[in-house]
Image 1 (cartoon, rainbow, N blue to C red):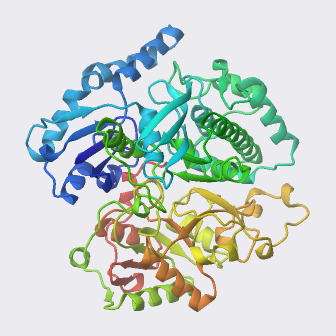
Image 2: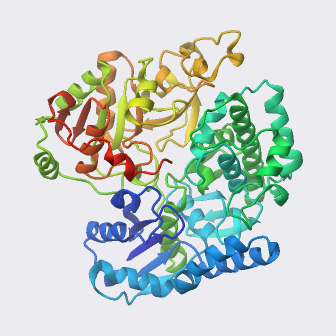
Length: 618
């Protein structure tokens, strides 16, 4: 049985093909179109999935869209009516799109699918609810026979958070929170007010939070004002948002700026402007409030489900700091988080919900999970890499032995070189997990600055993740829990830390940033945490081999890992994408397949900086 799952028309569109319960292929449309967070129908991703499985459009048993569009339309109409006449400008902008396309989604999906193979799709179309798709993406691939499922995002149709119970091949809804009251919307409102882009900049807000002063009266005041004015937090984790302070229901912005200025005492930060301590303290305040709400919801999930395991999904589940707080709370014995927790992952959940719940197919449970390490996208042969090299007259050295290639790459890393690493199948989800990654030496005190400013062209405060071989994890981090998808944080071990100076919290943000906090400074964030990826020989033997080679040279079984892209660009997918990114930046080395490209040996790049116009700053 073959089922195609699709997410589209809001942000992060994607496609997944599930074959007899096995996740055969998955990809986001942005990787093909090079348009970050592309929301359009995922024609390219669908084509890839079908090609990967040698499947025609009418070989599919069903195509499943990740939400119910008519329920979402109902929510929009009722919301506009409730806030009328205030929301007319937003209403006038949204309605033509709905009346032209989204109300007739069945016809639109069939029309788009016909473009893939010039044949009309005659099969079954299914539409599970948005949060069921999230819940399915979290539970069905997990290693648990039975689990509570907590989904947290902005909004689906009406639901903004749900607690479900998964058992065997079934999922039952236990409790939900409804729009406009939403933890995801609350967090995004602060993302907006602090000058970052909604639906893409939330991870920046999380990264900025440790620059806040946890001991300051200002941070405490912000937390108090959030709880007393913006969000009434109940004991079960549900929240009631005071719509006086928000504009997302009826307007075109997230916040009622005048009310926020009056409450918090400063104006909204303009995008790309300087970051001040006030901004950092506000980021820390909303992060702390988010963690409190998430832990309360997890406690409720434990109480009403009776399960000792928890599955997480939805956009808020990408907040790895909040996830760590749930884990450390001890509420659940085990937790598992869907690596593509955002809307793209809804395509996976939709397909799995159809397979198990509509078609009543039995579920396979295995350890560590059914995600194949999340390496589910396209891969490219050495022949295809050589064709790219020929196109650009690129110079490379090929290695017949991949052990030698890993050894040479590890040597270059140990010498301070920044390496683009392009191998195997592309990752599914927003994190680069060692197949489309930029790598560096975590011991190098200049590495974070170099990667941010000269490679990624992004804000200097942004932290980087460590990739550590699983068997060495406890040498560097205080954790014994695998984190293969970079969705948990862990403290750097006390023995590796440098003590903070007495005046640390009064230091300038830049001075805080460049204070060497440990012997792996490039991956140690300001609060001594790290957003951890544990690398397992079973799921990515080549990446494991590379880090093991680095350990032989340096004694350190850990390296810096960041996504292979520049700011505003989707993660690279093809060899051509990778080579272009390599040549446009100050990256030193590119490793693709069995070939190593050194920057100093490449012909001059003739295209200048025109490429920067292609990418909108995220």
